[in-house]
Length: 366
Image (cartoon, rainbow, N blue to C red; front, side, top):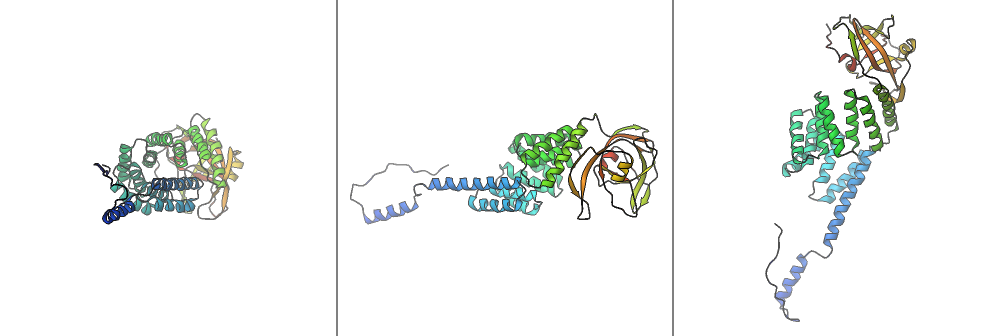
């Protein structure tokens, strides 16, 4: 209930004030809010909102350091309002500063059990440290409080993706994008999961919308995404990828070359045996540019540069497509690949078999 005064006021006659009455009036006036104080409060609120809007723009540009400075100022100006603190915690989650995010979000969720955003941020910290059960409970609580809480829908989508429930992941991420279509992170996640679900046209569309919404000034990253969009549109024109035929199972010799498991396989019905490394750390398969030229495999599209693991060098991202791969008695048709230059070493190979290809099989090394 709001505090209020009641009763009948009796005003003294003009010019009649006792000293005690005058003292009372002075004290009362000193305690009464000055005229226009509500305007000052409104100005403070608008100042906080402006700081948050400016921070959001900087986050879209990838300038997290300057965004953090603005959000800290918003927190200081907002007083007891928890929203700027949660925005700061949200930024810390993006930066993987999960302990700091948790230290902000947890006391707010505890003090404000109806604050869906607090539970969504707290759930994201749990997701970031791999505590999936806790994250699920917190996202559920956030959505129980507010079905339109996009951050919770996005968190649920990523959680389902990490647990390999791809269709559920897609539905949740689509819900997040529906409620907040201007949030670049949700579009990027939707694009990644759509590609994983082999919905390549949908993935290309989501990446295209991501570029339209994001103001990230990293030109190399944007070039990579544009090249990926072109490749996904190419894949979307194919009826299906990784189509298997031939025997239900096969066995092939494995040779350890430089501590790498290498097998022989054939590409595009060529008789020449090729040496490929089984590489579970790579999502898509890779073929050397020399082998691609020898087999007359032309690039589909190019897009930006990527950094090699364990070094400072960069290599151009080039996409290719294999009509057919034969491993023993098993055939796989329509296989996307990267084409890249392999630096000379003592153990030359023709390529690497990525997880997308071998995930079609139960693979055992013995």
